[in-house]
Length: 240
Image (cartoon, rainbow, N blue to C red; front, side):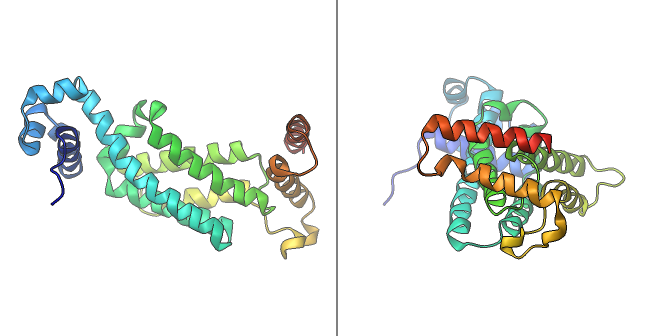
C-alpha cells in the first residue's frame, strides 16, 4: 500500500483541480483547504498566500506537460523524421494544452509568472532543440533564437486572443499563425537534401544556419575557435 500524499501535494492537486474546473476565482483558501482535507493555516505556512499557491499549481501542471514534451522530443530525434513536421506537431500539442487549460494559460502568460518558472524554461529548451533540428537540416532561414522568439510570440499571442474571444479568434487562428511564421523562418530542403538548387539566397542562408548549428560539435577546433566560427556565421546570416 502506497503512502498517502503529503499535505503540499494534496493542496496543489486540489487547487489544480479547482482551477481547471472553475477558474482562478474558485481557488480560495477555504475551498482548497476543504478539498485537500487540511486546515487553512497549512496553506499559508506552505505557500505564503494565494499567489504563492497559484504559482505552485501552475508549475506543477506545466511541469507534467513539459516532461511529456521532453520525452517526445527525444524520441523524435532518434526517429529521424522531418524536423519541420515535428515542429508543427508540437505546436498543435501546445495549442491543445492551452485550450484544455485556459485558466492556467492565462495565469502564466497574461502575467509575469512565466519569467521565473523552471517548467517554462524547460519547455523553452524543448522548443530550442526542435528549432535547432530544423537549422541542422538546412531548413532555417533566420537565426535560431529569432525563430524561437517568433514561434513563442505567435503561439502565446494567438492562444490569448482565442481565449479572449471576439471577431476573428476562431479555432483556425493558431494554425494560420503557424503557417505565417513558418513561411518567414523555414525554407525548402537544400539541394543536398532533395531541395530546389535554384532557390538561391534562401538556400545560402539555410546552409549558413546548418553549419552554425553544427559548429559547437565540429572536431579539430578549440572552444574559442568554435565560438569565433559561430560569431562569424551569425554575422553572415544577419547581413544576408
